[in-house]
Amino acid sequence: MFKRNISTFEIEHTISGGQIIKNYLDDKPYPSVLMIGVLDDKIIHVVVAHNSDKEECIVITAYLPDPEIWNKDFKSKK
Image (cartoon, rainbow, N blue to C red; front, side):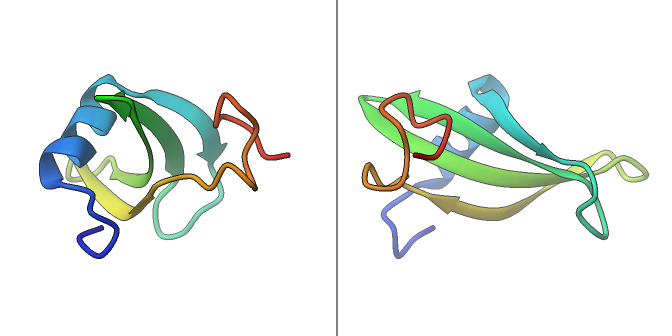
């Protein structure tokens, strides 16, 4: 995330106030979700796993979605 110029604040903002756009219920060792967040016109995707036993979120990856791959709403791929 640091190589992609995504701050910890932006990650936290996306997790706390973003929208889930895809569920990965079969991910191992924990199910995960793809979330979208917008902060100052910057669109961010974050994949987060949830360990319900410890009530913790694990950030898998964060990136700026490529408009060549994603539709204009950045919620679905072309």
